[in-house]
Length: 357
Image 1 (cartoon, rainbow, N blue to C red):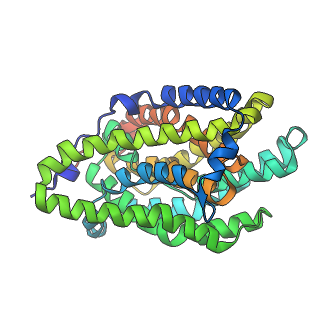
Image 2: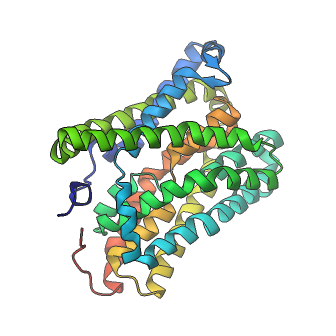
């Protein structure tokens, strides 16, 4: 019998559908609060234990936990039934995407925009973009895959595998690329950040999923619990953005073009990685329902992990945190545009079959 997890229809909720609008509103609210209460940064930073800001840590966990409870890791075993799309996403996410993001971040911040941006701040912006580039596929990929008529079962498998891989590769890869960019961050700092926000939420999500499915049943879990979790995650994300922009407001008001300067390489990266994934999927003969989610997973970023890591490693007021927030701002409209590209080109792939979800 197929699990409800793979049968669920991932239509855009009210919050998801207008996420770009909510993000923009939260940016304005955050900037306004920062201007009205200039001492907010000092107060927020004082609520810290061992360099971990408690209110922000709680909000970041509230972002991550709802994502983790949606992932059925038992589905990972199904990857052997469709190895090509899984291998494609793994290669793109971990052998291609981090390095193209590093190159684009360096090219724009150290060369093209160099005359207009302070060198130290440029380094922080590069760091934030690197943290985005090595954090693939949030659970929102399930939404994009559904809208593009992709295979939901396969998407679930690929999200689960990449989430598990992130636990192993995120810290060493981040440490390496940040070092190449001459941004010195202790390895243990990144590792503990990933452990705190990915590992703890992953464990909590797994335990919750296992126990609730056993005690309350799959129907209640899918239709009641997860429905509330989706809203919780978005609200936590928006509140986190208000916090971040309270502290980033002065930078943005004084240098409004910085957001555009950060967005340009992020947009190029997203389109480039999508093109590679979609093109290679065509070349190796994947069916459309496999090709679409494979390309979507590569193009999207796990911005929750990137924000959590940037805030923990570099601080709430850092340029790295700002870069990851810009990533959120462009993610939704870009991914919706890519969904339309997929739908309009699906006839170029082998005959569309009903996904065996």
